[in-house]
Image 1: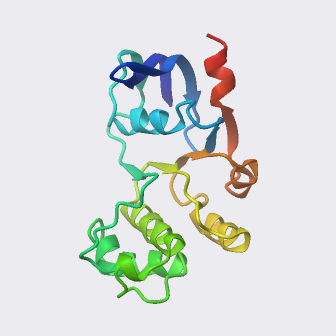
Image 2: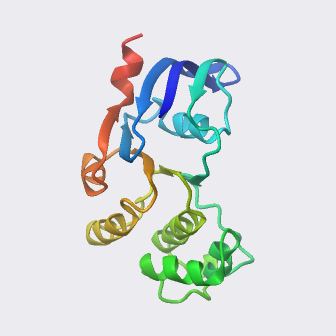
Image 3: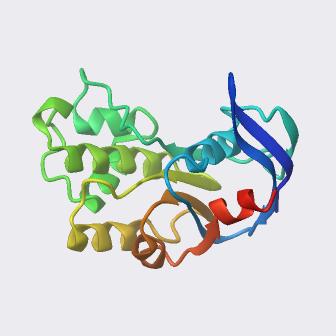
Length: 189
């Protein structure tokens, strides 16, 4: 079980999370919801080990393989969609996930794609990387309602535990996620 105990974290001159304590389940999906600025992205960065808490502890992540879909797509502009995904896996798995994300032309470069297509390539890369924990920072931005529902159904339950940062409760429902109201937990302190 992943547990945060009295975690305080932030950036130089700004504390974002203050004495945050909760546990995550072994399996399933948890949606961190809160207005902008309440630390959803910061929480994902702490879980990924990219941001060290200034105090408190995070346990249960030892030996876990973590896939992270950042808020920015972070695609390599000099590589096509297939190469952007196969950089973390093999070409067969890359093509599988690009197909699952409804990318019709895996030879397209990022500058040739819409924002929604770039988002789906980035999501395909996270899924192809796989692992024990999937961190998704606004995974469905730029996708229309019907496409969002299809993509969520393909992502759901593929990795043991998924933690999402989202603004829309409907997205949590699509992923079958329990909701962690970050603003309410933080406001308790």
